[in-house]
Length: 151
Image 1 (cartoon, helix red, strand yellow):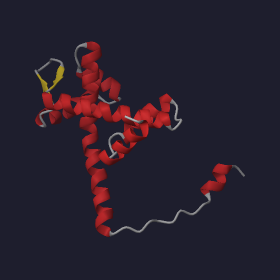
Image 2 (tube, rainbow, N blue to C red):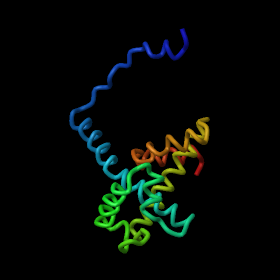
Image 3 (cartoon, rainbow, N blue to C red):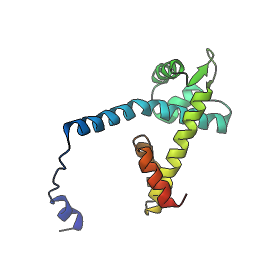
Image 4 (tube, rainbow, N blue to C red):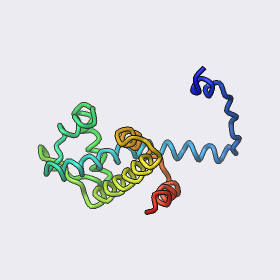
């Protein structure tokens, strides 16, 4: 029997939490899921502008692995939220608010990646895993990651 198989058989006892605390935890996760789209889009738009000089919907769709109509719908949401600006049939640009969000996302992403690499995770896996973790990590946890990294 391998170590993994042995571990799979272990019974993990649930930690009992107060209903209010548990509900708050689930609410925080739901809120993080709602903001993931905006964060992913502004981070990608900022990257495209820096590397290509502009962010076009077709490139956004290609890189996110979604259809162009999905990008159009989400760009409309971002525009209403004040994160992007766009003229009809033109590239997409970040507002000051969008740029600030993109920079915050990038900082969070880099900290998570560096932390995972410091734990011995390969760079490719760390980059991949950080895409999910970065949206859910609290400021307290980020500070602990930074402290661990000596930053």
